[in-house]
Length: 338
Length: 96
Image (spheres, each protein chain N blue to C red):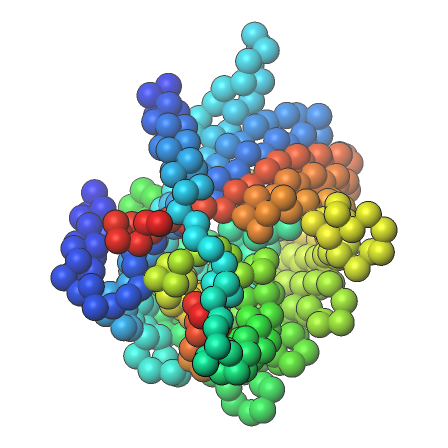
C-alpha cells in the first residue's frame, strides 16, 4: 500500500510542476507464453506494467511489477493454476550530473546484462530465462550510484555500485550485500565488455563474480551476447546470437520482420546446492541448446517460437516454447492524449 | 483466486486496448523549410546515436509523443547508462 501512496504522491508532485514537459508514463509488456518442457505443458499469461513519473528536470520515480499465471492442464482437461505477483523494482532516481545518478529503493541488481537490460519480455530473445539469472539475485533494497560517460574518443565507461540491506518482507526480499558492475562500451563498433561482482554481507559472506560482452556490428543485422556468472550455488554461462533476415534478398515482405535466434548455455553445480530449486537452478550439471524464430508484426508486437534440448544426467528433454509479446505505452497525463 | 485472475485479465485487457489509441505520428514526420538543414544534421547524428545506444535492444523509433519520449529517454538514461550527451542528441532527434 505504501508503494501506491508513494507513486500517487509523485504524480501529484508532477501535477504541481507541469513546466516539465515530460509526462508520467505507463508502459510495460503483456505476453502469452506456452511451454512444453519434457512433455509437461504450461501456459503463462504475463502482465508486467512499468510506471515512470518524471519530476522536474533530474528526478524520476520508476517501478515495475509482474503478474504471472502458471496454468497447467488439470485432470478434466482444462488449464488452471495460481497467479503470482512480484514487485521487481520501485526506485527514486536523481540524475546529479553527467557522471553520477543516485538511486534508492528497490532496484534490479546490476549484475551482468540480462537482469537490467534484457529481462523485459518484449526484449528477450528467448522466453526462458538463462541459468545465470538465478545465481546473482534479481532485486535488491538499498541505494546505488551509477552512470555512463565518455572517457576517450569512441570509448564510454559505464558503472554501477550498490549497497543493499537485508529484507525478509514478503515480495521485498533482499540480501545484505554490496557489489557493482563496470563496462567499457565502444559505440563505433557497438561492442561492450564488462564485469560484475557481489559480496554477501551475511551468513557465509560469499563472493559472486561475472563477466559479459555484447557485439552488434553495423554492417550486418547480427547480435552476439554472452554472460558468465559464478556463485557458491554454481557457475553458468550463456552465449546468444540473433540474426535479422532483413538482408535476405528474397521474400522481403516477410523476411524483413523475421529474426533467427540461437543460444547455448551450461550450468555447473557449486558447493551449496541446497537452495537451487528455490532459485530455479538445476541440481545437476546441465547443458541446454536452443534455436528459435521471432517475428515482428510491428515494433511492439512480436510472435516467438523456439525449440531447445536440455542434456543432464537426470535425462535429456525437449523444451518447446510458443508465445506472443506486446509492449504498450501510454501517458498518464490527460493533456498528452491524442 | 478466481477473482484475482479475473481482475488481472480485466486490467490487462483495458490497458492493452487503451494503449492502442495512445500512439501519435512518427517523430520524424515534421521537418520544414527554414529548419531543414539543422533538421538533417540532427537526423544524421541522432540516428547514429540511436543505433549505437537504443538500437542495441530496441526496434526502430517508437511512435510515442515527444512528451512521452522525454520520460522514456530519462528512464533509459538511468537503466541503460546512456551518456548525458547521447541522451540530449537522441531526444532532439526523436522528438523533432
